[in-house]
Length: 111
Length: 117
Image (tube, rainbow over all chains, first blue to last red; front, side, top):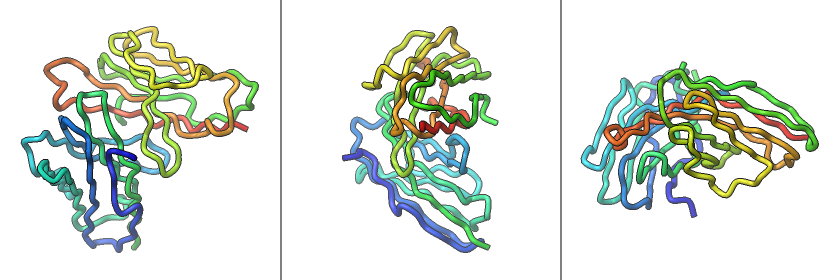
């Protein structure tokens, strides 16, 4: 069983709307949690990174939250744009290269 | 651009071919990684190199052979692959020093889309 579970697997939203992606993890001990955005045909690009002591981090219209007690994280996209269409991957680490990857949530933004 | 380049971007090969994937990072990082990404599955770590030394081989079949001649370059040599090896192969790099370890981020290349016929 994967140690990082993401939901939903995919979603479709209208341009301008908000959406929230979920990530639940069982990785322990926890070092940090990252959200990556992966455009089709490209490698993942880091959006946010949070250590165990942080519970929110923003990057423009992307806001990530972390609850280390319940081992849950969310990524909120505000006022979605067509360019937000991508796969969003939750990554949890013990040490830097011991990363556990979620399978990703595919977001499609439609005009 | 992330500072990590990969060539070729697309590769089609037969099961008896030998080919190599190349990765180069221009970020001054000390650690480099190979990942395999199959559709709808989480990224799978294949190999890790730290200061040119292999520090992890994640039970990868011997038909995949990595090479790290220096901290900036990483190769993945392929031979006698199987159709199930078709996937996106991603290279990444990171700083990998003690001070940065807590918030170190891996920077990914664009990947090589490999198809094995």
